[in-house]
Image (cartoon, rainbow, N blue to C red):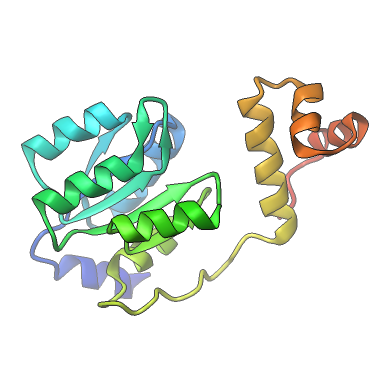
Amino acid sequence: MPELETRIAALPDKSLLLLDDDQALRTRMGRALEARGFEVTTAASVAEAQLRLNEKAPAFAVLDMRLEDGNGLKIVEAVRERREDARIVMLTGYGAIATAVAAVKAGAVDYLSKPADADDVVKALLASGDAAPEPPENPMSADRVRWEHIQRVYELCDHNVSETARRLGMHRRTLQRILAKRAPR
């Protein structure tokens, strides 16, 4: 994506706050955004993000919606208070219309579901004005979205198959077969 990297290089302020409690995602996304030219500061919690904001108000922010110590919407509001022109993208593993609307009302420019591709995040951050960003180059298939959702619920239920099946409204054996398979593309 040389065009995006050229646009990033031309920015007067490349500071970016990346907030996510998933260390692997935070590290991977942070490296990918740095490689594209952003000056990334990371935070693992709402409290840590507040500390980073007190040090410097970033021009860009990529924030997780649900965190162990609170909600990423608090950080959207805090960024907006310190810097009105900041471009904010919300990430979430829970794609729901209500949370997407809340994120945009709070001041986010876009709302992406996890796992988000770094190029899609950059496109959303750099989308001009009120124009919607381009659709993703390689969107997840419906089967992959379903698989990701099942994995997330399974993780939230502490890998308890019976509880996960109950919450998803499916038979336990069906869930076991899905969990035994590889992720769809």
